[in-house]
Image (cartoon, rainbow, N blue to C red; front, top):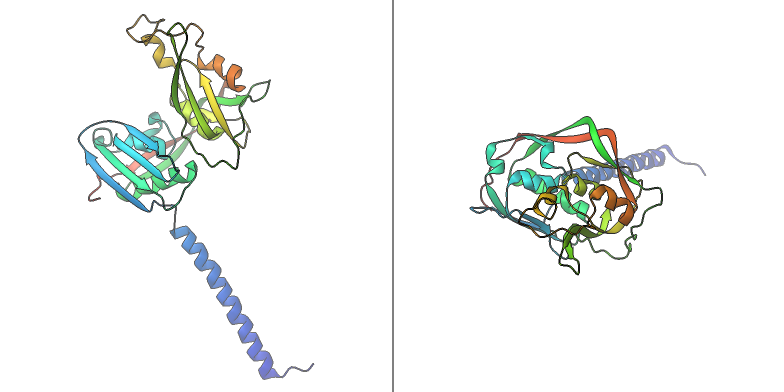
Length: 276
């Protein structure tokens, strides 16, 4: 087949235009993705006079409810760090309290909701943070020699129940506190444990899935209020082990002292929110 020069030129121009359109489309999609982060569909932020300190996800995996919490406390949940990992910022971050109700357009997993909460703080509080990694002594969360004892969460079950505390009383009326949660990743479990220990916990389990976690143990800060400290709190069961003994026995995990990177947040700017 013989192609005339005019035909060739027209087809070459058409191919160039199509290629340019394709490149533009890809760039536009990329830019749209970069400019369209995970955000809540509706959200309200209101200053309140009273401290309550409640931060939780509501059933349905779409909504975060916060009652009477200060900004630094909210940041620990949104960025999954402990309070000791937050540096800088104005003093009102620990003295002013806020109610926040934020709802996504559709159900999201916990990681997405945390990201959306970060974006909400950055927008409404004009929050700007700088991340720094420091090598420190940490607790490494590892699998015990006998293997994990945690049930793998059914991947078809989209329940994202936040991990939280529970308490069981024995027949003698004594108490043994603990924790339980469904669909918990080990990275989030390590963060949760960090909040009650003297140093950060880093996930070194290598377990990629999500698990149902249930463990009875005595948090360090509670021993003084029970039987051992002779305080006025509820009597603690003599069978209630500390976390270092409970983890291997109940979950097949263990904590080992190690060196590792700990992320810190340096607050460079924050403003009290105005309006709703």
